[in-house]
Length: 79
Image 1: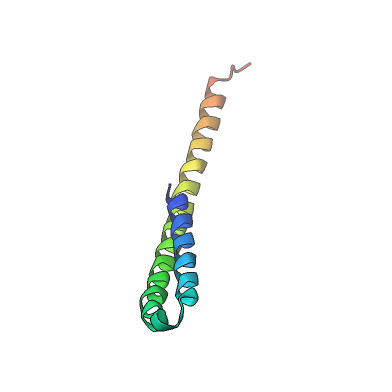
Image 2: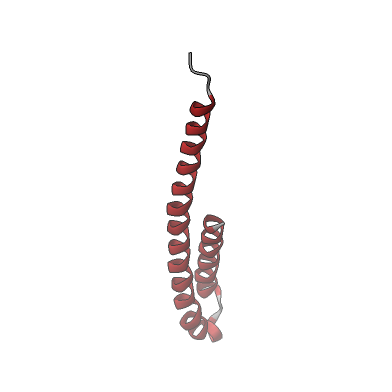
């Protein structure tokens, strides 16, 4: 779930940055002052969530594989 949240935040950051450059002349300065820093904040949050998701999900998936392998060898009949 953290990986999905990071990806969604990354897309929001990209959209915010793109909209900052698409706004027409009268409102361009105001939009740039709001949307560019907002996109940077969203990008930092996306990176944090994505890295946190990679670290926690990689750790939990390795542990579950090891537990499954250990239980399978424990249940195998010994000759």
